[in-house]
Length: 428
Image (cartoon, rainbow, N blue to C red; front, side, top):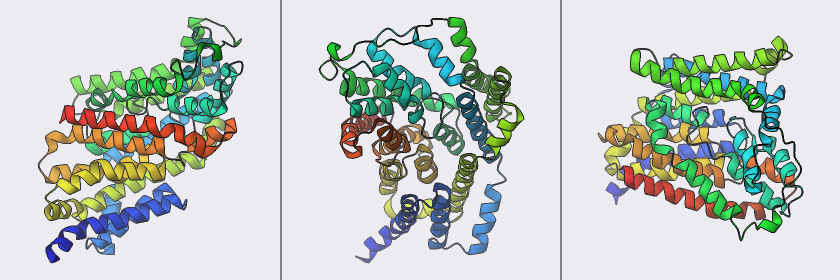
């Protein structure tokens, strides 16, 4: 009995710290504050004194990867805000609308397009467009809501501008191509699952899908012009990162991402001269920007406290590693994603633990399969979370019952998680 309690003790300490984090998220004290409190409590529970905790925290904020991550996330938020505030995102959609002849494609195109811009609550940005394209269709508002919500998030496991992906790369010290070459099936799975549950004949029939009268502009030049900042960010980031890795491997690959995002911001500012310096001042003063930066600070502090306290080593030694692997690769990412409703939360709170367990067990060669499993598990939690801000805002916009609409999300999420487990088995 005593040996069992001894084996369970490290897990009880970690679970208590995670309960504190989840409670903080639940009671809205802030994601960054919740992770920071959980990390410090974990350090104390594993025997760290206050002074070493403060020292480790200070050192965490001097890391090069921390500084690059701050720059990347900040530039992404500036780019997203600039395209939204200038109306360039709307102009891009108007330029593309004439190319869409299928009613089902029109329903999903604008949420998917907005999904390329990683903005908090972005689904509410595409909701008016879904309403416009479907106003002559015989579709329930709850169906409009789930279509908008689901297809807004199809890119989250493959699109290199999403903070969750960027944070995963920073924590695991891998390149973009090393991750998305394994997580890419998540995107077609999302598409196919969404089509089966929300769009296939029998769910939406041809009689329900009359095509509304929308702007029919088919100017490729206009679409290219309005989409130039996005193209600059994506093509530039992937191209520069690949070039740096191939020809200058001693240079941090994050420098290529920062450069591409900076050029994209310059591009949107040149195209929309009315934004000017007042816009940049407003963006730099936005609470959402500084909240995200504080989250990154908390994550890096949490990661280094966990390493300094020997949390991973104690868990692996007590349970032989198997229980620690299961908890950190599936259960904890799903739980944190469910409670927080945001990718950055489950990546920042659980991936340091997962990577540490893998290293302590000498299983570094299995990093990618376990990252894939953890990513699918965590993202399932995010998508099934009833407090996901995109879900709440979408339901509010379409004036539909939250819980009845939420039930339509559960089955697709379970299918998505099963696909992640299958991928894990293939990669392992």
